Length: 112
Image 1 (cartoon, rainbow, N blue to C red):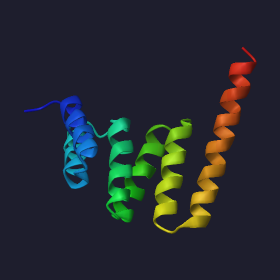
Image 2 (cartoon, rainbow, N blue to C red; image 1 turned 180 degrees about the vertical axis):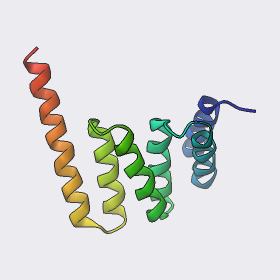
Image 3 (spheres, one colour; image 1 turned 120 degrees about the horizontal axis):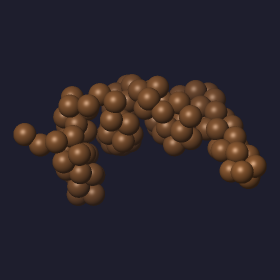
Image 4 (tube, rainbow, N blue to C red; image 1 turned 90 degrees about the vertical axis):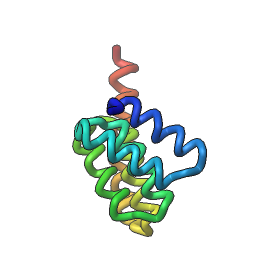
C-alpha cells in the first residue's frame, strides 16, 4: 500500500500530465491516510477547482485554512477557488485576509 507521500507525488505527476481527475483521486487517497496533510488539501483544492468541481474545491481550501490559519498561501488558495466559482465578494474578503497575514509576516521579519 502506498504511503501518503507516494500518493501525493503520484497526484503531482497526474497534474503535470494534465490528468486532473486522477490527481484528485490520488490527493483524496493521501488524505484518507492523513486527514491533516495540508499539502494534499492544497493540491486537491486547486485540481478540483480546475475541473470545475467548485464545491469540493471550496471544502478542500477551507480545510487547508483550518489546518494552516496563519499561512498566506492557504488563504490565497481559498480566494482563488472562490473566484473560480464566481464567488467574488468571498474571494475578495479572503484575499484581504491573505494580504494582512503577509504584511504581518513582513513586519515580523523586518523587526527581527
